[in-house]
Image (cartoon, rainbow, N blue to C red; front, top):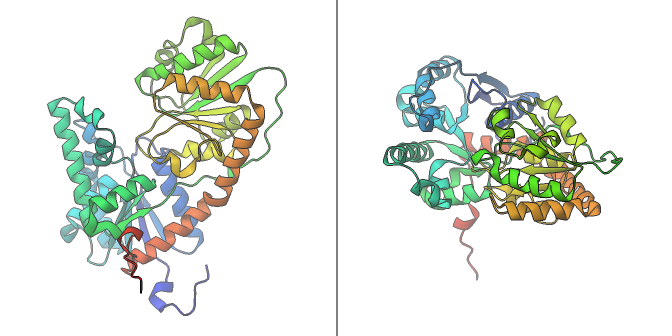
Length: 397
């Protein structure tokens, strides 16, 4: 990569980075795929990128603190690696970032910078949806508070922290004014393999719905919506990909008379997902508190019309009725109305799919996302992060 020759020499040097991938048990989670794709792009630009892939660890004591427990276990090994290899920067999930940055005086070399990803972190989610915390038992409320405390410590001690949604980044900048310039926005990207603009013409009356991701409460909302729609559109088919619940248990949430019209795909790799996006007509996304999922961008790149529950960060990517339809979370009536509208309007489906494809093509390839990331890493490395826009006071003469 060519750089401006007027820049100081140290800013033109390639960086030596250590990327810590999350969750050894689930190597193809959204977070891991983001880390690996961006790391690959940075390697192509000449940066030295190493990966730390955590080994299988002991089962967590509590599900709510699993990431925190795993971070504490692996932190000494990561610190030893950092002292030995002298990395310029360590990039980690937020739990590992908390552990390393909080005790960086003892764990990391003095010049090593520490940055991490934050997506759907506990304190932000609890302020945005307080009803979820109000339902917790005293013990689980204590664990939730522990997660919030760890996130606060990470933000206060790191050199930079990235959010996948503008809403969460803006909240962090105002919640932590002293660290506000370190709160940065980095959208997800999508692999080139998912980009295809032209969709196959359908023959016959069969229409295929595709749902990718985890539905809460055993997909009751999706079950009620599909059952109602199937009575109106008897040829309607539904594929559910990568659900949270076992296939048999999930299928039992649907009435017996629609079972033959439902296909469940428990574990879909990238090649399988590409084929599924090509073979379906409408993509349905479940609500998420973890920021916009990669499946949203994959569906956009595939030129699919999308009906998405309006969770954290989705409005950053989708404009309602321009590149997709946004509905309230867990609202089966809204889901039925949105899907009926699309099923009755194939031209609207085509327009929404094309607009989504153009948006993904213009802004969300891994190369474009890596351009942003590389620039921010250089700013962090040389202590040149700009102030957030809301902190800049413009004087008028």
